[in-house]
Image (cartoon, rainbow, N blue to C red; front, side, top):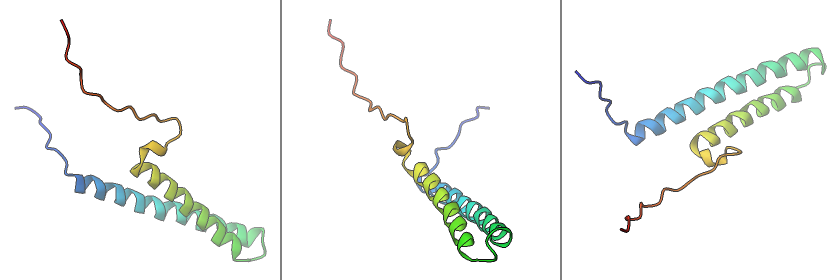
Length: 91
């Protein structure tokens, strides 16, 4: 019995990337929100701007990660090499 894998449909790959991006957004924005609340209560006398700022930082970090997920050419140091057709050997 061989273990062959079925090809994954491109719609499924795209859906998995969107799901990962949405989960990343919720986690990072939530962590930013929590850090903003703590900073607001402890350091800034209950102002609201630290909450908005840190939530925005978390959402921006999630956006950047999602952008790199959909376009790997934007990862610093990545080089895209195109495959050329193999030239026939001449004898």
